[in-house]
Image (cartoon, rainbow, N blue to C red; front, side, top):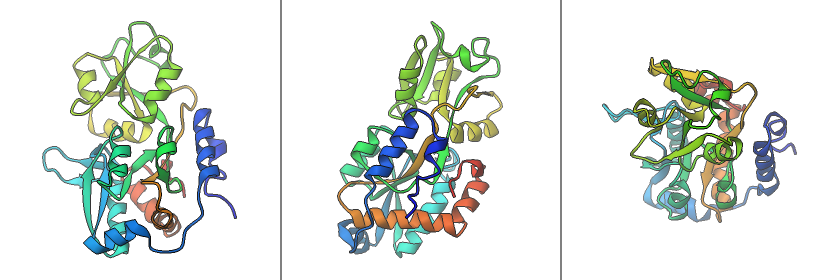
Length: 274
C-alpha cells in the first residue's frame, strides 16, 4: 500500500524531509475498536478541538468581533458533524499544544500543526494535508531588510513564534542575526512595528494572509525553498483508534474535495496536499 507521505518527501528539503520520513516510518496502522477518546467524546457529546486563534487563514479569531474563521474552522465543523457531537474550541498555541493534548484539555489539535521535532517524539499525527514554506516579513519602509540575505547580518533582530518549527531552524540556519522568540500576549507584528526587531519569520500561509490585510507588509521570499513544513492534525499518544478516526477524516476530505474547497476559500489552495 502506498504510504501517504510517498511523493511528499522528495519535495521537502533538509531536516524537513528527514522528519517527514521519520513520521512515515513511525506511523501505526489503524486500530480496531472505539478507544477511550472516542468513548469520552461520545459520553459528553462534545469534541474538544485545540486551535491557535492567531493563525490567519487557518484558525483566526477576529479581535473585534471574536468571530472565528479559517480553513480548519470549517474542517473542524465537518469533523464534529461526522462524529455526531457538538464542537468546543480550546485556545492553544505552538508553545502549549503538547501540554494541552497530554493533559487532555482537548481531544485533537486542528490548526495545521507543523510535523517537526520534538513534536514528532511527543504526539501522534494524521497524514499531512498542508505544506507551508517560510517567508520573512518586514515593513515597506525598512532600510535594513531588502532581501533574504539581509536577514543574517550582525545587529539584525529576527522574531519567530516561540515553540514553532521555524524557531529551531532559524537558530540553526542564521549565524549572525539575533533570533527573538515571541510568546503571547506579545506578537511578532507588534515587535516589528515597535522597532524592537527588524523582521519576523513565519509560514507562507500566515505571510500571505497577513499581506492581504495589512498595507505595511513587505514579504521577503528565500531565494530557494527554506524548510518546507508538512502540517497535520495531532492527538495524544496511546489511542490508536482515535488516531485512525482523525486520519480517516483527513483522507475523506482529500478525496471528496472538502479540503480543496476550504483551502481555496482562504487563499491556501497552492499549499494543500490532495
